[in-house]
Length: 199
Image (tube, rainbow, N blue to C red; front, side, top):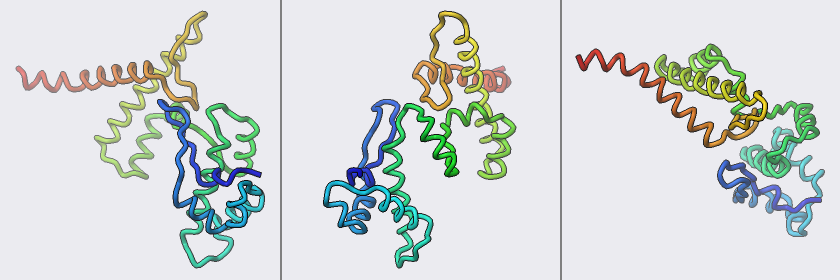
């Protein structure tokens, strides 16, 4: 049994404010309309509600409203957002993986992506220009350089660093170093070009 609001309150992780709760009006109205017998009691039996939401989200039950699937998914997303915190839950991750959901952070994806993979993805799937792809490659190389530098330094005895761990949010110091690195790369590309015009 859970509080009904878990199905219409989305928890977002904000690097500055921490956990932010956001009531999703469409999800709230959907739950109140579809499950009035449970919602107004104060406690919701999770299994039947979730079973029904999953069926609607998969389109297994025909309805007259095409948005049923989207709204059901939104309600499930709200419920799951409450269950997932900043800590890594091995049991939850294992369960989600068994269900075909692999949780990985954007930062972990960056750590595992090579510049060639990035180029191929942006060219073949996002149809970016060569210039846009080159800019993205510079950003990725910068991220890798700073991350790996901090990672190597962090392995020294008695040294604390601002290392970005896969799955965590980077510190402001890390982002500052990344900005300085990228700025240096940009100037190293621009200065030779500008010097041709300044002579």
